[in-house]
Length: 411
Image (spheres, rainbow, N blue to C red):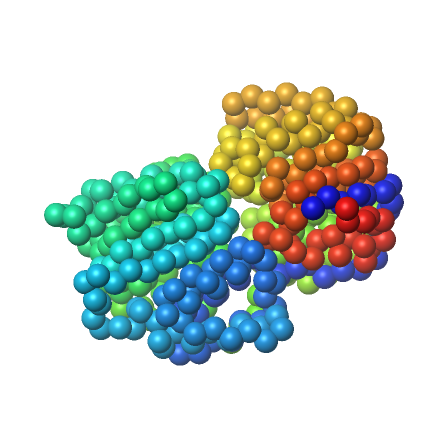
């Protein structure tokens, strides 16, 4: 799908979409209870649909009414006392890295075969943490991790209750290990070898698990614990607003817009709430910003820098393993706006000035690339392809832009 955007200014009030990160966590926690939970204010992006598919694989019953999800975990496999020796679980994770990495942690606790399907890009992402743990615990073929052409296969049950991993790995693995320890019910610890990145996402997992009755937290600065015998309890809970996607709306204020974004909690643990501080710095000067704890903000920060004073961004190496190689493709697309860039191994320098592109902008099938470049196109005019990628996290993005007065049409 292509979207043609005309030069226009965004004005008005709008509510931030619900947090995808918290919705993932609440939905999974609800499926692990022995009761029915009600989760409201859910935005059914492709990633959230993937997580709902996967809790149904675990046997949870799901009913959806508008933006509310009713989840009954009583029929789930985790409440079974026995397992068939040939039982197989099939998880369709679509393009959601969070979904696959979270559920792999759970799968490691089950003495069954779990097959994980998803896009080629997703399957080719790193999964070495789980592979190492499973291979280390391999015992006469009863525990293993296998990569096949079209799927990844996990067979549990890992007996280990204490893990040591690098702190600068994706926090999705750490969440998966916390879920694994909570499901086993035997307690345990995760030792993180410093430095630890994306700590805010770990804290979001802790909050969600705490809210559903699991006793989990930081034992010290580098050690996480899950108490023995903690049980998941059903809850009625509302998903808070999403700072990650709100950044794309608030960014219009830095290119002449007048947008008020509602529905964001000041008490949120979301690390991407730092976007407000980073925006201020980029508006004042050519700032140097470290995105180690907020890599998802990378593309929108690059776009904001390009529209203002430029900027230098460090800790960018992890952008290579997202839905696209985000650092590389943003540099490629910004060059079409006549923006100079310099990419190094772990840093990217962005120039400023954007001119109207003389060719179509490529969205690279990446939701955050599409939304970031749409910001610049509202200033210069132009066409972006693969715009349907926004369905992954923010399916109503272009409709919301229309509400704010951005002139666009689908081609």
